[in-house]
Length: 203
Image 1 (cartoon, helix red, strand yellow):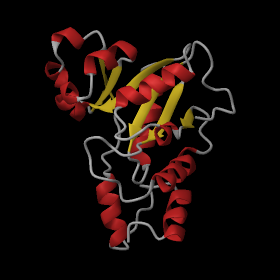
Image 2 (cartoon, helix red, strand yellow):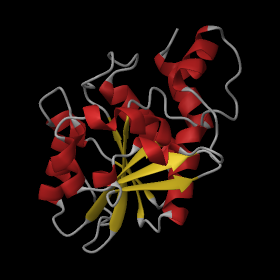
Image 3 (spheres, helix red, strand yellow):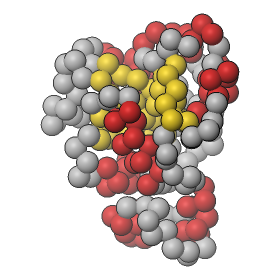
Image 4 (tube, rainbow, N blue to C red):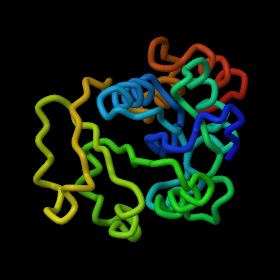
């Protein structure tokens, strides 16, 4: 991963935000910005998935999703976009990515950012015990959610729940709108919309 700006400095604390970003939308950016403030993070590292271990292949290629994520995050100094998953032999389990980040940045703290709806499957993640030793989890919950009971007692000091306002936006809904030639204004950055049109994605 390139960090030419030197933002992943020694002693900093970054949220690791992995996902397909197929495409990256306003909900992703809002979640990241809120968690920076509420979890006292230096910033958020966006890492588009290579070949997901538990999901079908994304509609856009890795290079296309990386480009869209870079466009979506442009101008926000607290966001960094990483191509780290392109260098990991698939399937790209989260623990492999965190191990690679820790090797590249041994003096940087990483926390894994997830939506609270993913807490119910956290126990299914590859080597979750080892992963939590390397990086704690920050789960973003909608106001009124109470998924704390989904976290086993032995993990509660490594899994932090934070309420955020967030935005209810789905990448699959956006792809459907794009196929139907419906407006996605306000859901995607204008530069991402332009990229999708030029590349003829999701048609």
